[in-house]
Length: 296
Image 1 (cartoon, rainbow, N blue to C red):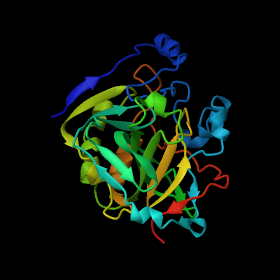
Image 2 (image 1 turned 60 degrees about the horizontal axis):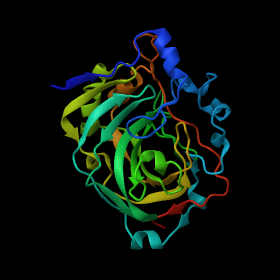
Image 3 (image 1 turned 180 degrees about the vertical axis):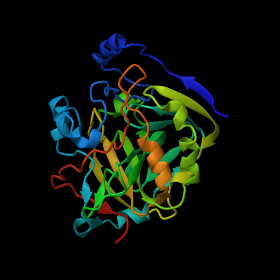
Image 4 (image 1 turned 120 degrees about the vertical axis):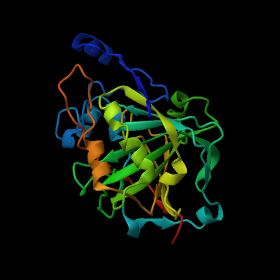
């Protein structure tokens, strides 16, 4: 049984509007400025990803993410396998939150580590979340040779040389994000722990504590080959502070689990109910960035 923790910061439309006028920092340091951005709604509404540049000029920056990974232009880097990626995650992922643009699992990253490959320092995990599409033809933020996948998991890590997430957002090596593609197949047992409690966090800002913690290691594929490039956050504030590590091997998720994600609401109980059929940003221009591969 999960212990339900409801975070109700807004009880009526008036208070909601007042709060949305302010940009504030969440407990993990990201700017929670989706009050006015609302839902993605298939990228066609006025406040969707295609129009973020109006409020965030960095959206037109030189190292925005995601991108399309064109395999025939990827550069194999022999130095990467000589310094393999290493990760160690404690089982401390216990709180799941409806952020209004998806679910997020906050992690006490103390004692965790991500290092090696293109990373010059040690990083610790902060949170992980997922992006998905309205059907199985789309959903991943990164694409490979123009092909999208039904969903993409992001494990977010902070460079330990920066004391806070707010500070890390200001530096090109501030964060490292592991991207994992999801394909339709068997039920993912670790993700099912999230699916089982989504009815308790249907609305924005609702959170729930898990009795059984989620193990981030079980969300990673066995094969660790990856692509890496310098990029950005894929949601506002879109800071260009991310060293991306996109794993080549995929993990599986069931159609039923994806449908459960889509039924989340992107607003609070006070508002007209809107589900979240998709929450991905389209690929951005590569702008001559070098995409390196850990294998030939």
